[in-house]
Amino acid sequence: MSRHRVTLIPGDGIGPEVIEATRRILDAAGVAIEWEVCEAGASVFRKGIESGVPPETIESIRRTRVVLKGPLETPVGYGEKSANVTLRKLFETYANIRPVREYPNVKTPYSGRGIDLVVVRENVEDLYAAIEHMQTPGVAQALKLISRKGCEKVIRLAFELARAEGRRSVHCATKANILKLTEGMMKRVFEEVAREYPDIEAHHIIVDNCAHQLVKRPEQFEVIVTTNMNGDILSDLTSALIGGLGFAPSANIGDEVAIFEAVHGSAPKYAGKNVANPTAVLGSAIMMLRYLGEFQAAALIENALLVTLEDGKVLTGDVVGYDRGASTTAYAEAIIANLGRTPQTVQVRQYRPLQVPKLSRELVWTRPASRRVVGVDVFVETEQLPEELGPELERLAEGTVFRLKMVSNRGTKVYPPTGAMPDYVDHYRCRFMLRDGAGEATDADILELVRRVGSRYRWMHLEKLSEIDGSPGFTKAQGED
Ligand code: NAP
Image 1 (tube, rainbow, N blue to C red):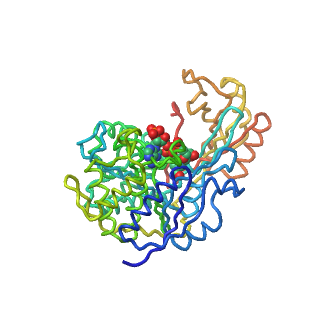
Image 2 (cartoon, rainbow, N blue to C red):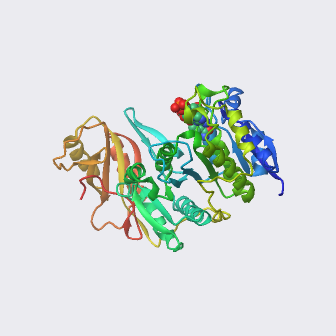
Image 3 (cartoon, rainbow, N blue to C red):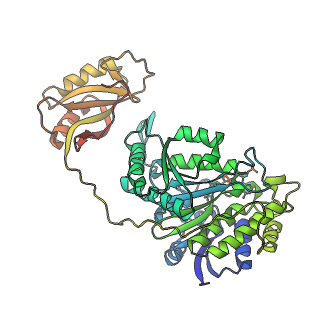
């Protein structure tokens, strides 16, 4: 076995205990790893490093390209961004893989159903870009940015994962029925990419139904690929199906770097008590070994874990109650003692190397055959009601290339009146479209309109409305024709 260099971040709370237990098991299994132990998280924030990740840790990761980490905390009063998110974004680990499987003697309402599935979550885009603005003092906005490239990378990875793990189907869970452009992009790219994987069944599922089906019949799923926010929620749900966060490992995969960590956090109430369940971190380390090509070592350790659970004599407090549970160290010792044994009732899956898809890292400029600016949405703040606002905007647009098409309040058309009776807020989206015969709106046309609207109203946001390859690159308001 060749020697691998891995950056090891013990982390906060229960992190150092579960990481140490895992490291001892890997050492006992004879895995040849040279660990570079590095800091990140609470202690780093307290030193005044705002990102929670010091330069030495970043340097180490650049060198090793592989990280095993414990959970990181952002202490109250320090730093605005989580060190976890910083790490994922710095190294563009675009896919978060969260497998769950039923374990022997870990009793849940689903025991016996054979749950064995993986959630593949897009890890850097979506609402987690956290681009937020107060549009008015009473109305906040978060931008949900979804790129074709981001979708393609994570979807290809999901299909490759299915192949590497001998799984037969991939579900793509989206809210494309409501968010036709953003979540819809994930669905469209999924349908395109799926054609290249005829050996894998591809299904689209609306994400809310996916949550429902996961609770009702989780055994129908093998791989679920989804956008960041959906995946965050669904994967906590799937962790709960198999016994909780103590059993949920994960891998953050990028083109260059992979970060392996438990799904759980630092569980501060158990910190320093030697009671935390290290299975989630151990499972993450097993995923890391497969990523490093150490399939035999991974199977040796996974078998020892399964035998320990199957024996059922040494189980942690989250499984049997903290008054009767084994300590973290005793549990690790039991796993070490079981190295070399094979479980009787459950099997380790056959794995092949995961082919991480290689897409060009060049900036992608998606060029349409045609594009035309056909209107503009101007967002304004006012305490007027639509019946006053609408005619006033129509007057302001006179003599410009635009006409007021409609005004909406929180997404529902309210002018011209439709009979809708929304609970108004002081934030309107005013949609102006080109008048008949006007070819294309220029920036000067838009600026003239905004100057006029701004002479009467406080505006805070503009959105150009483009037709891309002949189709509208914008959606309609509820009630808009
Ligand atoms: P948490 O640390 O995951 O703990 C929530 C609960 O999950 C615990 O109280 C415990 O449940 C159970 N649990 C988690 N890990 C366990 C383990 N190894 N063994 C046994 N039980 C375990 O979530 P949190 O309390 O919301 O977050 C605490 C801190 O961690 C926060 O600062 C948060 O920001 C951070 N965090 C970091 C990461 C990361 O580094 N990737 C992820 C999530 C959260 P019971 O109470 O039912 O026993």
